[in-house]
Image (tube, rainbow, N blue to C red):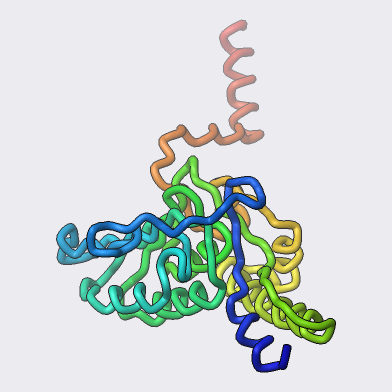
Length: 237
């Protein structure tokens, strides 16, 4: 296979994450009567301040393409948008384009992980000016993966392309969550899963949404302990 064709195949590389066994057949995303996948911008539900946007699908040709997303995004004219995410990930390049479209949009972007933001969906979530995650939700990051047909040189070239893409994605996490690209790349190589609390601790989210658990009691300081001890002595005296 020549170099040009190798690059074309490399462009199809995907950063995938599914809660299904390896080898599970992939089927096209469900579509409504208009042929659209389960991605929508609810302009009818928009307030003067914010528009809800739902990214509830795979990213790429089996679900929401960057072209579809950007076209719909052009219709958001409110000062803010709330991007709700429930996606297993998908195409690296579509994910990067969607991330760029959100970062460059005039509206304030509030990303909310409703169920799962895995793989490409996890770095799309980094486009939020504010980032929250529902308490039962999860996030997952891992290295890009892909397919290529060809000789040994083509395989090596594909490996270099995947390293380049994964390093770029690690840079997105580092820019938004802190840390170094090298540290994030190490976590990606391990395929790391995060609970909502772990995502906040890692810097992948700013807060846990709708967390109704009472905050832990603050530890009693030394001065308070002494006051209580003196009070007990006084009472006994």
